[in-house]
Amino acid sequence: MVSLRQLEYLVALDDHGHFGRAANALNVTQPTLSQQVKQLEVRLGCDLIERTSTGAIPTPVGRQVVERARQVLIGVDDIRKLAAQASGGLVGTIRFGVTPTLGPYLMPVVIARLHRAYPDVRMHVRDGIPDEQLDDLRRGHLDLMLAPLPLTGDDIELQPLFRERLVLVAPPDDPLFDRASVTRADLAGAALLGLDKRHHHHRQVMRTAEELGAQVLGDYEGTSLDSICQMAASGLGLALLPELYLLSDASANNSVRRIEVEDWSASRSIAAVWRRGSPLEAMFAEIAERIAHEARETLEGEAG
Image 1 (spheres, rainbow, N blue to C red):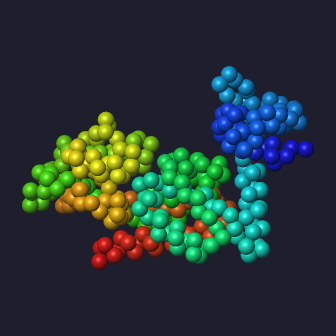
Image 2: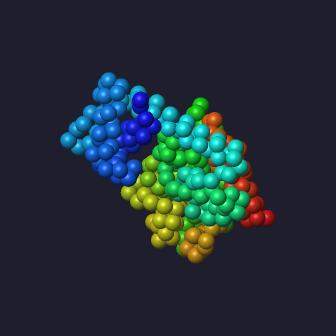
């Protein structure tokens, strides 16, 4: 009989591509993992893994088995959560993925409030690239994620939360601040800073550059919004920063100032995402609404 543990070993091997790393991730010895995967192959009567000098690669049939095994493991985890809900004792850890262009500036207050609402539930918050985290969500490595739209897929549920303005900033001594007003034409040829190409923020900066006739400084990609803000403060270029970041303590040092462009504006939409059919869907929807309330309260408070 194929065991769930054997399927877990196989999936971990696919995730890590190496027997040693997969064994470490599961806190078992490499010989144990290797032996159990071999037994699974014998029981199924086919090779699932190609052993190489550098690691392990699923065979063609192995790839199909891995994907089905992954869904089995997700389903078993869902059964456990359903049982916990039915007993009225929901406990455990929710693996929560957030984009680094939002999470550090919104989530601390939200997490504190969620802990009061669900004292027996732990929130494991992990920053990451939205496209990569969506893949992790589908693979069962994340339960819930917070990311900019667009995101698509028939296997996910999307709950739009709020729209956030994107603002151009520059150091206080920038020549643009001597102008009575700033228009698109004034920004033609301006240098824009952004994150690396994997980030949704990079695509937003590219779109902004196209709209304004500006240029993106590809040789000076930031690793975080803080690094972009610091580079802009040094006069390297203009930065495109989300409103919630500008309202946070992270940018409270007044090292940059907003540029209000008369004939241009930009924004982004943020959504909560989870796997369709999750047994915790009602809870995720409530968490999403709490996040939306906190963000709207902050943004509307500034507008007021």
